[in-house]
Image 1: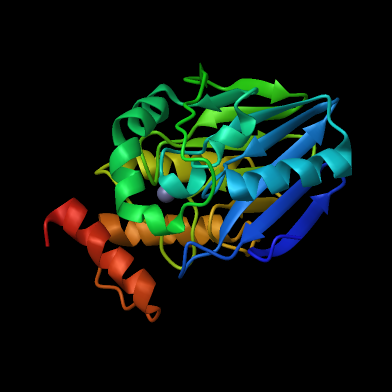
Image 2 (image 1 turned 90 degrees about the vertical axis):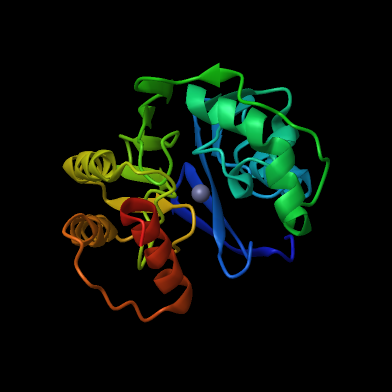
Length: 247
Ligand SMILES: [Zn+2]
């Protein structure tokens, strides 16, 4: 196992979750669903050094006939390992593809310390702007939230939701002024009644996290004063307030 892998979870026989220790102070997930000969990988963390290993591990576990990849959104800690899947279909929203292309150099320069592997840009090669079944009973769908270009994944067989960075505890991060749209996306997630919610940076997969996110977004909408104990989360909250209300 790579020393940077904190844990590997198998919440169902055809689902695997890799937790990476980084980028500090965060932990970050890469998820995989393997079904009917296909192995769908959600997000590619911080470079091919990590994802070459994940690909090999998945090959040993599931012997898939092919791989495909989803980028949940354009942020560097979810896309830099795309080059490990240069021979595969890579899905994202059209806006995500555009952002990766436009921001590749800037994101790489600002966060170079976190990158490991081949520094080659591999863009998504299939864009998704409406719900699309990628494997049997596995649907990708646009989920504007943390970013406008977010994509989520619904595993109807296991009733698992893969929410990317749209769900985080104790607070979520807004990267654009789309509070109303964000609340709609979370309401949609809740309507699916998932048994588990897997996210980009929160290890806890209890679906109760959707209530927490929904309450936090409501508090933001009402401009309520909040006390947040965790220092990193408190700064995220202040950034959200600054973005939405300019204070
Ligand atoms: Zn993000």
